[in-house]
Image (cartoon, rainbow, N blue to C red; front, side):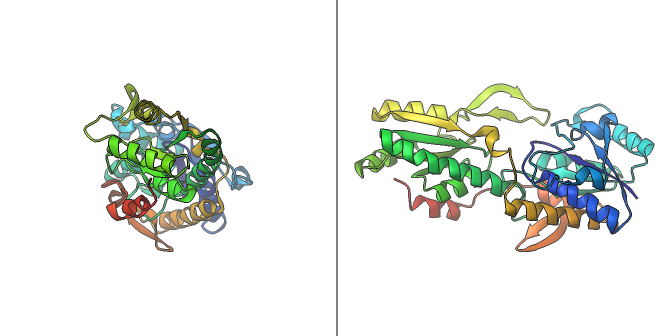
Length: 341
């Protein structure tokens, strides 16, 4: 069997570990051949490929990013896009696809399987917001990076008696903010699932100063005030219709500074959370996903995605991953609130 592999959407640590595991097991145990599709769905859409065998995956386990490249190309929005992919796969002799990506990438994979293309999915989202899997690789690395940043911000906040705000990723789900805020000892955590009351945030800030400590606020990029609008970088949309988020941290700093008279500064981690070497947890999880994804190809379990449930890797329908976002439950956020103020 000749198998195509692609990585779509935003890059994150652990992608190369998945690719390596897929190829190593596929070649050595199953005798498969592989084709690397370049730059997400742009690869099969335009016939952009690279050689992908054991020599190409040697040494890539600790590397961040993806050797295949990525993009946010959406073939469903391209006229005749699905048929072009099918034609290119046939011309290249590709029998099946392993699609590694998040909600958007796996949504395209779902459409392809419905159109008769054999495909298996691997869940990838740094926000950890895909349903049907307990964790996605890249999330642990992002939390580790954000936690270290918050640890470092504490000393500056205390030295200068400032409010320091750390803006982290999290468009619709606040998992990174919740985990890194709790691990880093942030005094306030703001997430998209719970619109915040600015007056309450100011009270928490002033309470922190009254106890002779400087406040640290960890805010997800998608957090929004009650009766307010989402703060966006600009009005443009990507190919999947997503706005470009960023700016909530700066907006919050200005509001708090005006109301308290205390200096407030913002650090936006942005792509720093995506880059660099994956943690040990993410390397192991990504490797297990890759090993089980190619086993699903061997079993011709088309239209499925590998997922982590408890400590086991299982197969679930692709639709189960893309139907509903996995958001932070109220009770989890209430646990963190015990440390606010």
